[in-house]
Length: 136
Image (cartoon, rainbow, N blue to C red; front, side, top):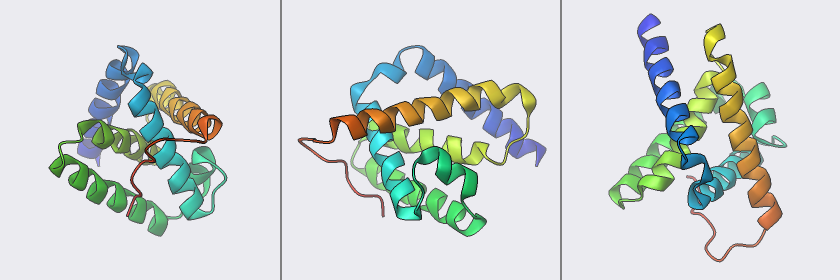
């Protein structure tokens, strides 16, 4: 378990550094994160990403992570690294639900706020020329 915690810590810190260095302003990433977060919430009957994280059961948690993994593989085959990144953001946030390291709470909170802001931006835009692909 300590090894998984260390891997999570490294991934979260790396993600936070990249988002803070400007990636969080990438309109495509914002759109994809927001769309996927809204889609995942809707498919689980949650009102939003935060609600999903608070009440998802282990079976749904596993299904979501599996869907993120498969969809990421499909995007990677197509060379769509930005969509892979969007799903990685959601996966790290979802995994954070099971982390208890106190020093990571601020980073997790930042990540969740980023996701909520992305979802709000997508909801506000509501019309898109190219809707994002559906998660399987």
